[in-house]
Image (cartoon, rainbow, N blue to C red; front, side):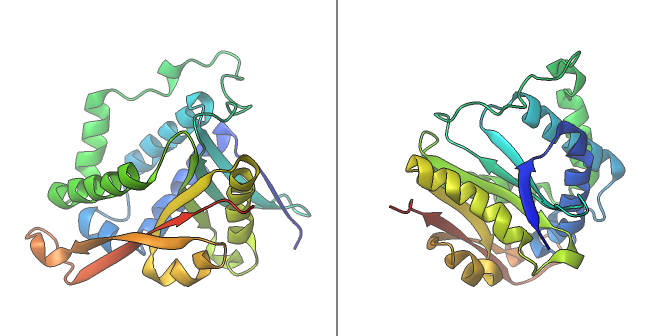
Amino acid sequence: MPLQVSLAQPSEALAISTLVSEELLHDRTTRAAMRLPETQGMREMRARNVARLIRTDASARFIKVSDSDTNRVLGYARWQVPLTFPPSPLRAHLDGWTPEKDAETAEQKAAAVAASVTSMKLWNYILDALKEKRDKYVDEQKCLVLGLLDVYPDVRGQGAARKLLEWGLQQADETGSSAYLETAVTLQPFVEKFGWVTVDEVAIDFDGFDDVSETGIQKWVCMLRQPSV
């Protein structure tokens, strides 16, 4: 299957949101903290946020991998590139669009989150823990961050995820930048093949939260990759 990588368009924001939503069903921490399957309102709110980032965030790159024979999209990734990179060519290139058209009010965001999150305590703990690690390891001036990578289940194992990873790593190597991600322990061996090394971990002890049904501990590993020379 010939694969090609290109920038995702704002019109694909709902497809990205829906794929992410489906993947959340398989994560223990997400199941513990959120009401799943997600509401349509939550998916649409995320889609508007994705579209806004594509159009306005100079450092966000939503990448898609496609079968070049059929043009079918096989998966998406979100890379956050250093602030020193040129802005995305998609930025502000849409006639008649203004940031307000995709904007959410604080009340709308709060309502969407409240409708989806079942344990606000666990939700906030996760966000704070991930932010602490990124603040520790990520230099926004010279580090790429992989914040999302999902491929459709029926095409896994056919090289789509590799293509999405390699896009960011090529950018990193060409600019002498490091690359950072958090991932499940089960995916650690795959990621290590691309030169990432584990520098830290985030552990969630479900037994410390009295409003969740999950038990035990789930861990993510924080991985950093230095540029190839």
